[in-house]
Image (tube, rainbow, N blue to C red; front, side, top):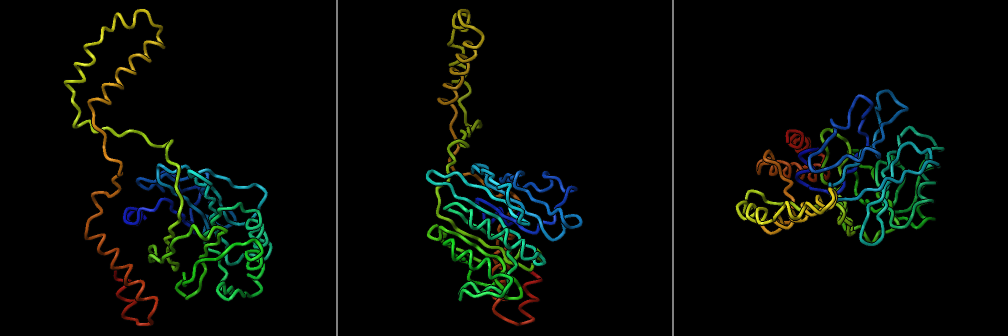
Length: 309
């Protein structure tokens, strides 16, 4: 996951079937340049040690994630949040529906769809192989969800198999399909039998509150800063001020000389780590290309080459 986050650099990372439990700390799940949204972490509690479920959400440090889990829905399992933008919020719902769950759980999932706000994207592993979204037909297990999606004006946009058995189990349901620019299969994570989905969404995140200046102190004009500070008659300036007023004056003068004498870094954040070498990137991309070949062939040799990669 660390390698993929550095190579693909997504704004948000959504994981299902994490199999986490109380013995796995948030610190152990940390990813560099991302924050784990701890309020959205969902460990599965109805199985031993969280097996067969679990949700995690990561986001870039400059994104404003607003958890919004409703308390009146018992669907197993989901989490929901909004991303602050410069216009309307983008609402995200991460879903994992256990394949063994019954009709009552599916009904709860349908309620989530019915109560969804506009600009909503629902994504995750729905485990409904008997639903043909392209031809709008389904077996009995998935029929209620298909009908609810149609009634509520949602669309299902994943059009390629997401499981090694050739089924579309991982879905993207949305009522703002015009904002979904691309959906791509970017290979499998480890030994997972599902592919990863890379989704490009057209939205303008509001990052103004998280932006802070980054100064290049290695190129600072320290001598000029010393000169600026020494020119101030501190005794005269501070003797008539209260402690709070004196502190504000000192901070203002210091900020002025920093702005004048310390250059800032460029706006682009460096995400690549020293261990992310050209060779690693080459192998990752080779593996991804091989995965797309393997999906369209029954060749044992092709599958063997992919496993070796």
